[in-house]
Length: 396
Image (cartoon, rainbow, N blue to C red):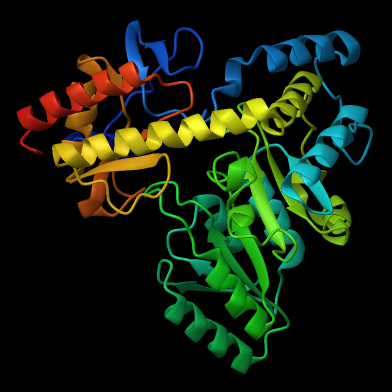
């Protein structure tokens, strides 16, 4: 037995290397964009969550600089002490209006937002029913509560109703159904309309993690809006770091839930609030998304997604059940997914390989995400490289 107390760390790293799934962090040398310099190489970027290309929008850059001049670089405290600036509340009002709800509360990240609202609303004697492919932040948020947890098969409404029946029979104080809106690895969309009908039947609370749906689905307003449920859906989590192009997360919901989160949501209570520059940038992003320019960007995003997805399918790649700009190229073995990613990078395309435990062992893939900023030329070049590398590796 080794005397090295951290031999287990070395063993774990070696295991990753032996299985061909060890990765070094890629470093962007300039701005995040459709084409950018990664590790000194100019490549087409197909892995960014910057759906609408807002990270470099001049209105956001200008707002950020002006906020620093007016408010300084930091908020100085948690929101509940003296860390709430006027622009924090301005952002939350704009988010609530954009999402068509009574109120919104901003958190440091989407991860924190999920933990905050779940921890606020669920406790001992409650039941959470969660889709089996939900994001890790939902899984961890549930683990931190004393609520009973059960999983339903992915997007399977018969299984969901069976779980609801069981929960109703056991007499839980309250039941919450939690699902992603757009599933981040497969790009498919949760059937929120059917989930809502079941929730109404069994008097359950509805919650959606719409990190990849906000700014993308429903004319940019999200998956709930896409299904016409904005007036009746209970809780929406959105991020400020994907389509909005900056940093953070938020809960869009009822006024009374927001008030309770101000008093009980631990990530909100114990983390310093967003810097003024970040907050002002997010305000500017919501304004862009609410404008005609925003509508045009969403339209271009979907046009690009359709074009690229059809191109991959015509080449013979397996893109699974994707219905959104998230398009996986599923190859099966983890090592093969990493080889595909590496070969694409050598050919001028960056698409990150993803393997177990993020996805099942036999469904490793490179995940591609197109943005509104990609040109048709960018996508044609990327498709040409996918064809070249796919044939070289025997994938197509």
